[in-house]
Figure 1 (cartoon, rainbow, N blue to C red):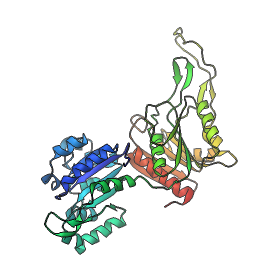
Figure 2 (cartoon, rainbow, N blue to C red):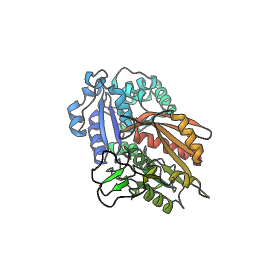
Figure 3 (cartoon, rainbow, N blue to C red):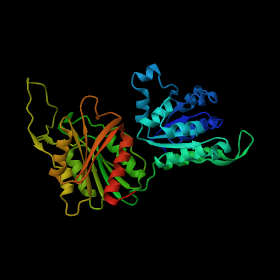
Figure 4 (tube, rainbow, N blue to C red):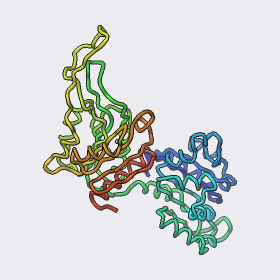
Length: 399
């Protein structure tokens, strides 16, 4: 049984008699835990109705590039950012040609140009069309650009001919899609990730905290699992589900997070600090609820331990990655933080109203001693995989 928990799969269905099989593919993806959205080309809609895919996926089916309602929010861009992976199944000879040439004359081709997600095709066509030199050159072009290819299979075709060109079996396509997320780049490595906010108690009912949702840290934990790592997730308060196979340790305060990290850091290969840890905590925690008596209330605060700096200062520290959430001067503040804390890498992003915190999308600026890389706005799950890939290459020259 494949596992696609928390994956967002955009299924493109182009004009081929094999389009009817894509309905079963949606069911496989849903059963495996994926959220599925379907983009149906004009040709694909000649074979299967949008209503079929809507009923199976539980989501509206997208067909038109210039959908008035969707375009109000730049619908094709939103779908491109939403997807963790894009699969075109069936991929007709016509769509393969347009994809190879970079056309953007319908919704599906436009999404493929606008996405950072992995793209895969499952070709389906007449055996002679498959063998045609033009088709093979288009496939070579897509292969050079990193587009994955699942199939085709050999056998009887709807036209009555026999040969290569029929779409790969649904079970095989589903398995190959799941494999997109299994990189193995951190196989047998131990990764500790901190995530979410901390809560610093003022009295039994009040605390100091921040707007962190933990989504970025949990996405990175999922990506590290997919890369083959053993993952320990030390998390502040959040309602997010724990990714499968992740060991989760729940804490509340910055001091508790510091203790948990130091207890597990000895055999850690990579430490990623995404948590929004409170810099200060109240000097005294009042034992009973503070009553409203005066117009003002003064709290005396003291510094919390610096978890990231303490890990980096160990005699044999792991590869250490910090996060910097800034409201201004992003690059300058991130560089200063990386140098001040003597860490290997920092991932920086702007925060503010409707930016980063609590959102599903984000963008990251990655800085090391010798390199700088800007990751475009996309889902936090996609960013998590991109970051893990960068870390694996930096630390182990993987890939």
